[in-house]
Length: 164
Image 1 (cartoon, rainbow, N blue to C red):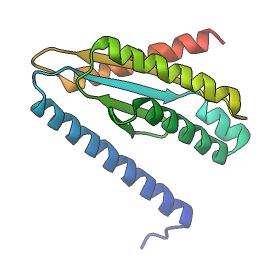
Image 2: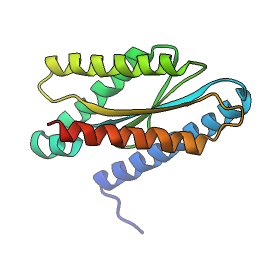
Image 3: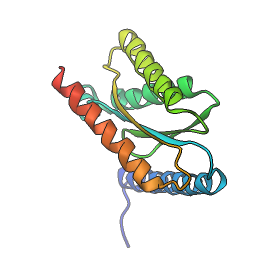
């Protein structure tokens, strides 16, 4: 029999929860593809910056605050126009239905502004790399769309690190 310490149990539960969230997200994404073949489809991805550094230097409670602040920012900007999912320790995916590329770019701009505004009021640095992908192709490839958004997000992260 395996001896589960409280922390081991919490880690197992967290991994199961993240797997459930990712599974739900993938199912809803593919359902969205089937239901909206002729509509525009997009994905916006955000990745918190410096979570490990904050956890190591300020403690995990401050790291949790960072994640909460970013999630709050994303939901505040997106409102009822879409859904936000936390898919990993510090990664988020945002799905907004039926918007133009320009409207998605406006969301991204608003998220960046709100993160900067939050950063001015917090004792922890609040920032995130953001990338997006958009398509209006009749035959959509969700995997390709996700990869494009992920690539754009990591490109943004590189630029942010370079400009420090």
